[in-house]
Amino acid sequence: MDEDDPLSALRHLQPRPSLPDDKTRLLLEAGLEAVTAAFQDRPQSQEMPLAVVWPSQDSVMERYRERVGDRRVTRAVMEYRWKCMPDFYADLFAWALHPSHYAVEQQLSQEAPGVVEAVPDFGDAAFRIARADLDTVFGTPILRIKLLICVSHPVPKAFDESLARFYEAATTWWSGAYASVIAAMGLELRPEIPLRTFATLMTAIEEGLALRYLARPAEFGHDLDALADTLAKGALALLKGSTQNPGDDTTLAAFFTGRLTAPPAP
Image (cartoon, rainbow, N blue to C red; front, top):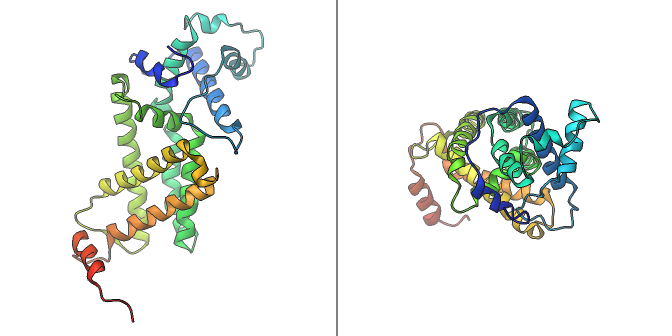
């Protein structure tokens, strides 16, 4: 594996056991902590390319010692499990998508309806949800690494099951959140837009903007608030076109045509 090219690790991945032993898990978690710290420590004025800053063996061991509360632990605990750091990095990718890391995304989806109910201005509520979502995406290894995996071509077979499992879970959580938000607005989705389709579209907007920011943060002034504002506007625009008043049978195509042919306001 080329240690300067994070994507090269993906070509070496093999399916892993569903849950590693305790020491292996703690070492992998220490590695994810180091990856997260590297993301968070990057200066705001610096470009943020879609890349993983690989943790060194020393940085992983330092965090592992802190976790177990024993400064005497030697590198042997890692070297017994991985013959080289590239092997550790490959397992780190696989561990990042384990279901044990889903909690942060699930909690965010559960909190979104409450934000809408608590904030009188819906635009402000949309911004707050968008900002919290982006903070989670950029601050959580599972979501940051997921974006990296998704843009690899082809996506490694070792990730087929884990990506499918993640997207199925995320679609289920957010479908429930969006259903609650739309109902709180006194609206309903148009018949040709199923709830899961709406959730998929919202996810695509979020992931697309996240990738754009990672590739070109200067376009947003290196400012997550600017990115969150763009995401909130996209979400509101999608809501406008996808919803209708209860009992309204206007199709999306008819709604769009009506907007095109409507006479100008006096």
